[in-house]
Length: 231
Image (cartoon, rainbow, N blue to C red; front, side):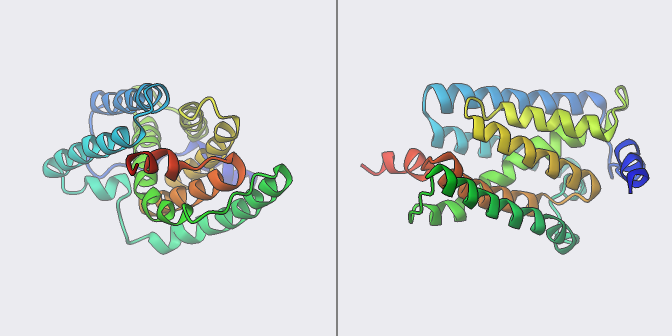
């Protein structure tokens, strides 16, 4: 088992791109993701423009995906927007999700932060969209590009740790979000470099994230994002 894990963390031979980009494109994509993260601090945390920022981020990156797709029809599957391995990746993620749900409820019960409300229902529907975008940026572009850089040959362990650290820092200053997203990104990075499927990762990111807010973090993202526009 230890030998298999060591081989996995050092071997990228099974993780090749169908149509490799240059290192320049890879680095620019990583930089764009970092700038999007900086934008989160400015527009979501400081200016409290949560919904406009999310909409603009989704629009910008959707246009970029469309641009890349027009130049290379294989790029979507290459990134992980694929259905052929949905069930196999689902089987890998499901046990982690079930353990996480039990842990969330347990922590929430101990803290007294269980906050069941109907607000979680629309969030469970909409959050997977934003979750998929986040996984595309963090896991697809950052981990995917770091793992295939020709000029900087990183081991898988380093790629996963670097990606998880970046994803965690974006959720500063909430301690629970820092911890939760770091653990999530460690596991997701491992799964992605093993078998790429952003649909599964995005779906569970949305569902687990919504539940995490209403059990552990004791926040109501639905009220923060949508209700203020309804008054």
